[in-house]
Image (tube, rainbow, N blue to C red; front, top):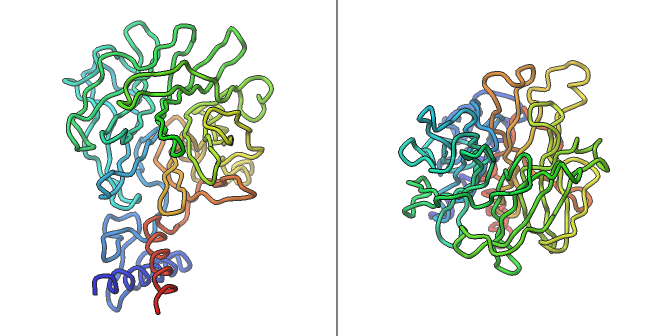
Length: 389
């Protein structure tokens, strides 16, 4: 009975979602007299309290550089974001942490750092955090500027099994470059499903060698808080690809599928409409990586160049989340006409599709879309029906 109810409600929710998208109605009919509210509402969910559709943005306030991970207990997902203006001097909290049961509705739960737990070596520039389950415990990797003025990558470890803290910094930078002008930023954790090894990726610059952006990779200890190997270069942005990348390759995020490693990264300046996401692919985690010829995600230039409201601009710095067999890209973008203004960079999500073996999103969506968990429910229901006697 439980499974029958589960499948029935999943299918009915998909029918309701389809009507919502096609008709554009604020309230779609479902299940007799039962009605679902707008997908922007926390009440827009099926019987299992899952949202069946959504419309960007997921979080309409400033949520830059969102890092999203699935929680190990299966209860949902957690997101953590940059704190643009947090500083030690102002007794700030840093890195807001959000929870979602369905990747659509997000609620603030806590902060990685409070004034009482602020890292001893960090002053400000609290950027690009990511939360990961590293061999059984949660670790937040992040960027901060030290008292020496240099940007470095740090790590904070959850003191309990609760992904929302409390967290304590490891006491010193995890990556502290010696010959970089801008420092080390945008740390990303990746566990190789082929070898089981743990890796850290990050971005530096080497201006003296005309390499303004380099994405590095080093092996981590199983604890996730010690670098085991010398860094190797995965990708370098320079004058050879200046038109496509504008000398920027940052915000790495690694995925593995069907024997290939996909390195997502962002290019151009984050404060301009040309900021976008690209991808490179390799048969080995250590490279060499071959760049895709087309971006994964860009501003809708078809509307933007005509002066039309394209809703969102400068999409970038994303995390890729696997749900079932599908990939979903969570990223930030500015509102059209309000770049570098309030409300800041809002949190977005769009499904990744595949074209000739390459992952593609296209442009930020600004109309109702099927929610990830609803698609997963439909997939389960379809398989169950097909396999039923």
